[in-house]
Length: 247
Image 1 (cartoon, rainbow, N blue to C red):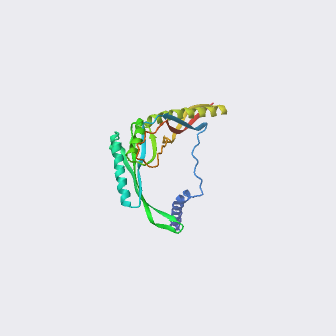
Image 2: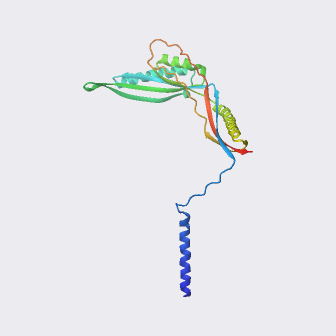
Image 3: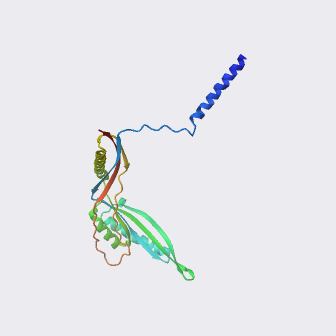
C-alpha cells in the first residue's frame, strides 16, 4: 500500500509537470495588454526646407537605326566617343561620365500580310553625366548635341550637402509638432508638458527633380545653348512626438 501511494504521487507530479507548459501555451489565452500611458498626446510634425541645387545629373547619349546591325553599332560607337571627348574638353571629369545603358533592339515592320522579312536595328549608348558646376548645364547640353548626341532624357538636380537642409527641415518639423499638440491640448482644456517620445517616421525625401528633354536627332548645324532654370529643391521630414498632458 505504501509503494502504491508513492507511485500515485509520482504519476500526479509528472502529469503536473507535463500539463503546466501546455497550459501556458494555450492559444486561447489573451496576451497581457501593455501598460497605457495616461494623459499623453501623440502628434505628427511635418517640416520642409528649401535650397538651390548645386549638382546636376544628365542622361544623354546616341541612338542609331540601320538595317545592318554592324553599321549601327559602329556609327553609335563613333558618335558616343565624340560626345565623351567633347564632355572632357568642357572640363567634365572622366569619373563623372558613366555608361548607364548599351542596347541593341531589332525592330520588325508589320503589314497586312504580317511581319516583313526586313528589319531595322536600333542601337543605343547612354551616358550619365555629373555636372558639378550648375552654371555649366546649358553648355554641356549644347556641347553634347553638337558632338553627336541625339538622345537626352532629362536633367536631374540634387544638393551636395543635403544633411544641412534636412536639419533645418527637422527643426521645422519639431516646431510644427509642438504647435499641433498645443492647439489640440487647448481645445481639450489642458496644457502640453514634457516630451516623452520622439520617432523619425521618414528619412529626408529625395527632391522632386525637374526634367528637360531635347529628344529628336542632332543636325549638321550647331545648336545654341538652351535656357535652363534650376529653381529650388525641397527636403521634407516627418516626425512623431508624444507629449505629456498637464492640467
